[in-house]
Image (cartoon, rainbow, N blue to C red; front, side):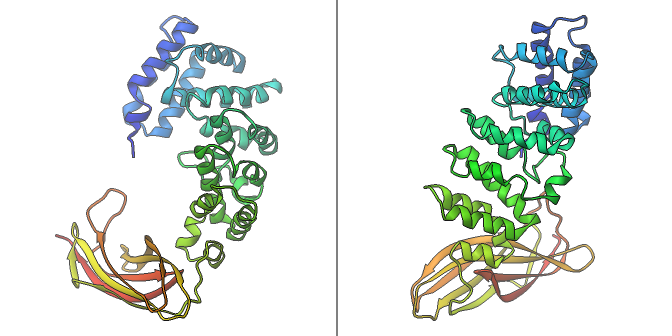
Length: 368
């Protein structure tokens, strides 16, 4: 994961001030923006974008029109690109939504699609969605026919209910079906980046309304192109980990196979943080037909309060012939990482096959 400084850096904001000075000279060469650059090291990524946004508006406080003319002039310069564009899109959104001129709302959305090929405008689109959801979604629906895949992706990505790094739009969570017309137009898009956005968007919907997500994916599967199956698999990933029967059935995994699961058996009863858990398991198809199996494993992590919480990890997808046995050996790392704190004490591992959990191997984690 890139750091904030690797993305919206002090140097990139200084370069932004230089670009803007070239198209709109002013005393101090956009002084608020230059001062904002010096304050960035103490801020996280989203706060950096908002801080520079406010500086842009402070340097050119005459409202949306003046900013829009300046940013459109900057688009003529090739160096106006990359993460420096994020706070620019935020300034466009903030001033367009606040403008007393009704036409500035639509012009602000139009400016976002001019800017998005330089760096996605997905985060700034949230401001428009929060101000007028219906109006913004109607415009985004029209974007699905745009010739530029970056704009088509913006229609899907910017309207995701759970877009990472972005402000939440509560109405998208309460009405998960409201963006489906956009996704219906894009799930067979010719661009992989657009299709991946559609899959991630439907995965977001699955967290709020699993039935709606499965029904949508099923409808798409009945009118597929060459990429639909892969898109549906990616979109159903959260529901598959949760062993949702609708998602598993859609992907062709049945819980009705006659299988026997042995284990999982940890090779050591105690492991130290920083070591690997190594465990063995086997799966035998006792039926008369081939069994298509989605094989995961579940680690029950100990929490600070002494309880445990399961987390599912992908392992394999296999087809077993009648009488065939699959032998599995797996290593799972307990190295120290910043995104997970390990608590010493009892843990456990289970197998999960086509959404059904089998066996339980207990082990103890210790601190070195």
